[in-house]
Image 1 (spheres, rainbow, N blue to C red):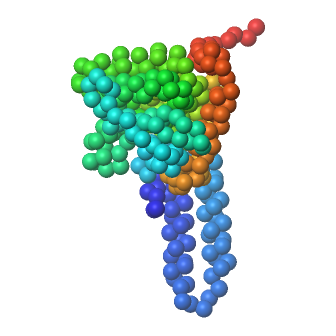
Image 2: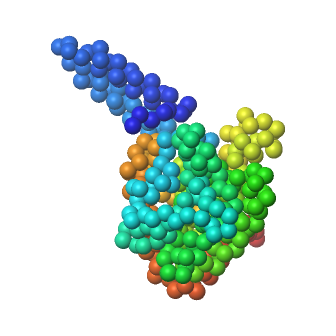
Image 3: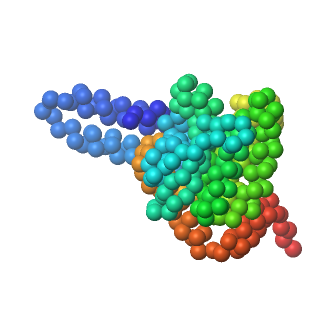
Length: 320
């Protein structure tokens, strides 16, 4: 799969094109091209590491939104087995932007729920660009309650720019649907693991993100508002989105330091879109490890820890 490069990846792409040109030019000629090829290959690797190991917050946002990045259903196919999708909220309808169902991961039966984006116009219309309607959150809660009933852990994969803000969603009480999920997930009597796999936008993400373990992929972001939205409010122009991204502390490392996220799952060099299979293996390891750890806790202790974890967020201590 040929990956579409981002702006900051252009130095790597230029070197790769240069290497291809040298190989084509020397093809069939009796000239030892090994030293030149090796030199450029080494430079490509060094440039790649220099760029990817020093990414700023805005660059990580761009990676999180990459169209070739694995989406929810990609990970379901690569990480889970025996997936059976379940539809409908039993109140209004089905929301294709919030698929979910029964599955198995690492031998552990579970309920898996996530937000699904599209890669073309047709799929984006079907998936509503990954922005769920109220019925999506109500379906998610229905599946979580089913998991609780049958003593199955819940795994949620978060990837949304935010819940859908349209008139129809407001008429069907999108804010109420998310608020109910926050309340009910806090007292759900079964382990919950959430992973931000791409975008984690505002209440749209939090609506399936109240969990015992909140993890993030290395190049995902999790924020109360998008960088563009923040820039429009504070600077009156979205061109300041890179500055907003830095100020929001929305990357995995910053959120881990703040105690909002419990752990970071590494990605292949350059991002998950460069190697779906490798990214899936890393994700699987992180989820299975968290589920195995949570399975050892009695339910009451699990709920106490979940409550204490979220109550501790935002607490500011003063040093004497």
